[in-house]
Image (cartoon, rainbow over all chains, first blue to last red; front, side, top):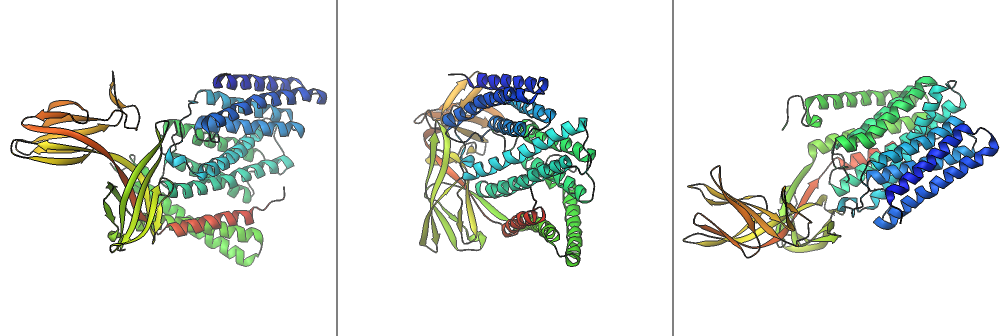
Length: 256
Length: 279
């Protein structure tokens, strides 16, 4: 059986190849190679996730390693959808690159599978984490679009500008649900709906950061370049909440 | 430890409360503004925005209620003990019938305390309290929050002998003049490495009681006892008989919860109304 780290590396190499193909191929008929490559990588990526489900007996959402692998998997699905919708080359290129970077990050984390501790043995785990994956995927997509449009600016109020706003809004809505489901679950498991745990606090900071964006947008700001910059800065806060807090501020959300 | 700057725990510092107060005042005036706009302009966006911000205010009110009005008590108890909930203003008690730990691959899977709710001697209900499954009874919620070990033994001196039962990690005083004490720790699955003793698992495969004897601030002796073994310290003899798990439960009332949950519901409803978009 192929080792898990080896499977991650195979997936990574295929995504890298897909990235190179996206960069060098502009012709529509060559896009089948790109799609084939992304689908091939996704096959190994999916095998990795299924392998963990079989080994652990639960969805791959109980550790930062699993969360990272799942998040990068969703980004590839989005990349495939974007490729079919004839999105700009830069967008199609940035998504697998970001997904690959997440996979590299996953390689630095422990892939060990331990039985779930009692506090995580709840249906709230599935609800809370799956919602978080959706929210973080939306923020990641907003980041990719922002990055691309930083290089090639969009006209304020254009279709793409509206798209960025809607994706951030989608992420914000789901992030609100992350905070709410987390609070309800915490009340049930630990007897307190809010405990200023570092992860909770930074999730709230992330929420406030994006709430600021929405308020500014309502006031007629955050269109064009400023909105695009915000997509980048907001995602930096998301990444710190996901990885930085887990690494440097151990708390109730520190999973081994 | 709390410091003036709040660096140890910033969320209990004066500076933090000031920030929250400012946020609260800001939200309050923001809500007022949105209400005035709602009166002027009757549309979905204004209504959604108002409900959304009202939800946030309710959550803050709930948070204040939780901070000020929450009452909780923690109990470390053995099967057979009864917890009195009289301090919550109800003539209720929880009798501990059993406490078990389920294991999966030597890792705790669930902690389960079976209790009987009693009121003035009458048994009202049998219930199970586990992590993620608190017991809610007449407004009081009781949670499974932990467990520990009780070391059971016998302490004998020249003139007398008595049974002792002490929680792991606590001090067993042998005499006051001169001061003599035993600190007892418990390892359910004792192993020794170059860096010291450690627990290989929480399952009692190799139960051992580690003792450290003190006289004043001087260390006299230390070692490890298996069940049935004894140690002699300056005329005292501690005989290690056995061990038992105790359960740690926490009962609480939190008047902030209804406010907070109503706030959550309004926040979601308000967001749906405010941001109903055509994709």
